Length: 333
Ligand code: BTN
Image (cartoon, rainbow, N blue to C red; front, side, top):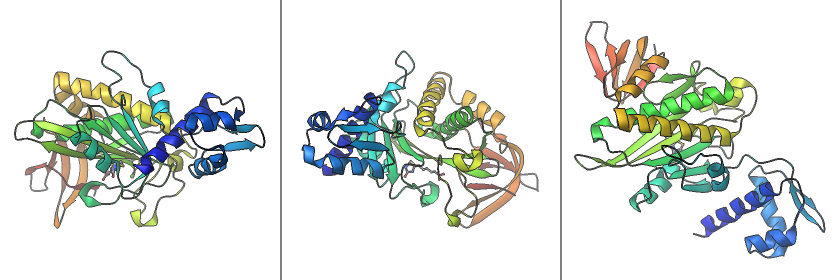
């Protein structure tokens, strides 16, 4: 609780400075708005700087931003999201953490406490970010995007795989639009730039036998990381590394939310076919690609042969037999 209050104070402070970005904001006003003692302002500004916010102090008069920060405060996110029919549900509630173990865990707690569809949980840093198969997701402070969206689709549990494909499409399109880099999708959950992964999707579902009760769509995007950890074996990249410049995380996040909502509405109205067909169109892995698929200790190789109506991957073995792949780690062979 203490931690969260601290997060809210930081958000409030950033919003206040952004609103008055062209002027020096008096320390007295900031302290009054935040309801903190004037004497602690120096400390609060130091905390902001730790999160990459450049703020200048003017002794005796106040504080001013050096440049508008790329911090994902709920207010900054919501201001950029349209309201209206068919839009504005995703991100209508935002929970912003400076540091948390995993946005999946925070979202799971909120989902069981009845958080509505479209609730967004976003963090500047994760200390235990996770990927598929229990792997870790490196979540360096303020350089990537780490967020989870709570969905409550009226779908049967068997339709869940298509949600991963849908999220991949939304992320790939948003990255392409903001950066102009060409993106690719590696079934089921990897967003690629060339042969390297720049983003991943993790979908966790809670279901009753006949219906999904909620789905957590976790998305990690490597945005402004200037280097990737060596133990990722050169398989990962960031948008910064691929394009040679940095990008606004806020702009990418907002675009992903808009694209996601668009595809989600389509999925609910027209079923999975449109999503599956679009995935097949844009993914170089969907058809005619020689791949190796591993899961645990089992391994198979073959050539991809499209997706099933539910979004499972079809792979033709060298003996001609076609396998339906439910999950696994796909690599080009
Ligand atoms: C993968 O590629 O294996 C999936 C990676 C998913 C990472 C995101 S970051 C936000 C959310 N919180 C997590 O702990 N994981 C997901």
